[in-house]
Image (cartoon, rainbow, N blue to C red; front, top):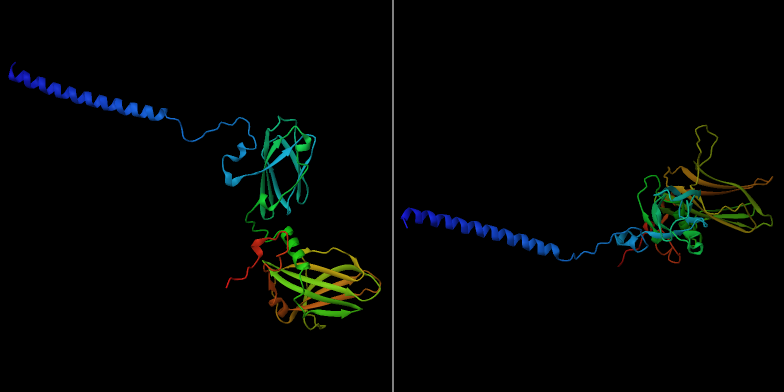
Length: 330
């Protein structure tokens, strides 16, 4: 064999071997990918055509929604712990409206399949939001006629327009109402009636003023109105004397007549005023005699208002924990 031909043959042979190696390597890689793809998936995938109660919880366990069952023969009422600002119903399978400040009623628009997902209902309150997954049930007895929304059903959200809800005010007022008296500076006695301020608390952006009356006469006291005024400490006839009337944002006791004793907790927006001014509570009588019971609260009393602590609410079934000041541990 000529030397030049032998050299050319060896070169072609080497190239063929290298090409063959590339082809084999490519085939091996493809085979490996095919084998890997054929292995069973370790992640469980579920294709849901009609949601069930368990299916609604597989996506994100930290965002489990409360399940509500409805029926076309039952009207379902959702009772929120505070006034409702907005209600959103995700589908046209449900109809509903807000029938009271804190109550929403729901009903399916028509008969659905048993356990069929009817939609999602979102209820936004003054400071909390609740979301419900609603299913249809063919059994009227299984449907919720009244569902009271509890603390486990709601989440906080920031509402710059509301620093404290009416529900929280009510719960805090009840706790103060049942607490012992700590304030002994503010009291008066007029017309056989002793008036006193039992406690003054500051919570968030509000003052809570706990006051009571003791009637020592045999004549019942008919309350015409309760007024709160910011006025001069020394009343004069000067024209520059100013009186500012304040409107309580919440009043616990709406009783208009009492024979022996009366107690109420008023909630006022937090305020400051100069030392020459006083805060005056006036409870007037709805009679010809027109008795007016007055309690005068000085600025010093406001400055010494107590902050809420956990001891006040230790016997309460529920309290808004975010307003409470816990004592520091030693």
